[in-house]
Each structure stands twice: as structure tokens, then as C-alpha cells.
Length: 297
Image 1 (tube, helix red, strand yellow):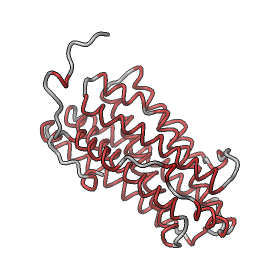
Image 2: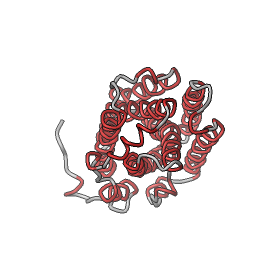
Image 3: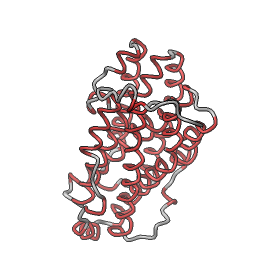
Image 4: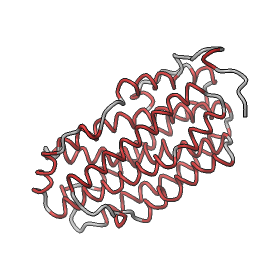
């Protein structure tokens, strides 16, 4: 395959486009080093926790860790599909995805080895609903792009990754995890890592909304596919929450399942409502949207 020309020496970069605005934010806020976070007090706090409290935090960490590793492993087909379309601004931003997901994987690996200090095999915490989503649905949707990078398959890859795995499951988990630690003034290093990680994820979700909106505006039939598939996949995300709570006779830290279920469903509905707007928008309007994280994510 040869090149006919190059965007940067022909039309130039569209710096006001949503992907480029997100790229600017990634360069400003995404450069943090998991190795620089001080976990010394976190280890002390960990030792003071009850056994069931440690088990819950370890369970959540095992879900985070495998999820971050999974998207690190499975992201390249999405980047490749966008690159083959010649969408340089999007590809520039997507380069930060892989870097950030790798950092998240590194961060949780530090927690497991330096704070919890347990054997690295935590797959016992990966329940059936979690496996259906992370072991099966995510890699299937992403790697399908290698053979057939159609708009429908691109939409399914993004909705699986950005809207369900990140936008529902991960955001609910990180919200709960951070709230536990913050409420009890525990593990400041982990809290700082989660805070930084959540900033990264908000940009990922914002891009997913942009990409899916662009696809919907191009072909209205994609909206029906998105609704159908998101409604199927959210059942796995909600199943993960149910399976976590079912693992304890008495939930550590006094957690209530309704809090997490309500948060997850609200995140799901917010994203679906936001994507529905694209059914009434043109491509020009999608490309001109502001990409403030709070507005899009």
C-alpha cells in the first residue's frame, strides 16, 4: 500500500475538531506516572482493614486490572480501522488511548504487588457476567474490525468499549471504589491514582460519543443497532454488580446494592440519551460540537 499524499502537508490538521480538542486535553492532563504515586501509607491502611474489607477491595481491583489489560490488548483494531479511513485527527487522539490504558494496567499491578501483596492470580473474582463482557463481548467486537471494519462493526466496537465497559461498568466501579476510600480516609495513593484514571476515562467516553454520533449521523440505521446492542450488553454490566453483592453475606463498608445499580443505570441512560441527539444532527453539526468532558461524558 502506497501513500497518495499526507494530511499535514495538504489540507492541514483541523485543530478545532472534537478529536483534536480531546488530544489537547490528553496532552495536558494525561501525562502522569503510576510509578510516581506514593503507596507507602496505602500499605499501612491495608493492614488495618478487616479480612472481608480487604477481600472486597481486592475483588474490585481484580475486575479493574483485567478490564484495563483487556482494553490494552484489544484496542489496536479500533485504532487501525480509524487509521485506514484516513481520519488523522482521530488517530492522533487514539494514540493516547493505548498509552493511558497501559498506564492503568501498570497502576493496578502496583497495587496488587505493593499494597495487597497477594499472589497475582485473582481470576477467581471474574464472575460469569464479567467473563461474558470482558472475556467475550469486548474482544469479539474489537477484533471483528480486523476482518470487516464496517460502520456497524465500528459502532459495536465503540459502544462495547466506550459506552458499556468504560461508561457503565468501569465508571460505576471506580465511583464506588473511590467513595469507599474517600469516606473512610483510606489509601491516599490509590485515591490519587483513581482520580487521575477517571480523568483519562472521561476523555475516552467523550471520544466514543463523538464517534458513535458521527456514525449515526452518517447512517440512521446504526442508531437502532446501537440501542439494541447496548440494551443487551448492559445486562452483563448489571450482572457484575449483582454477583459482587451476592458474594457477601454482609456487605463490607455498609454498601447498598441500590446505590450502585442506580448509578450504573443512570450512566447508561445518560449516554443513550446523548447519542439519540445525533439522530437529529448533521455531520457538520457533529464535527462542530464542543468536547467538554462533562458535556459529552
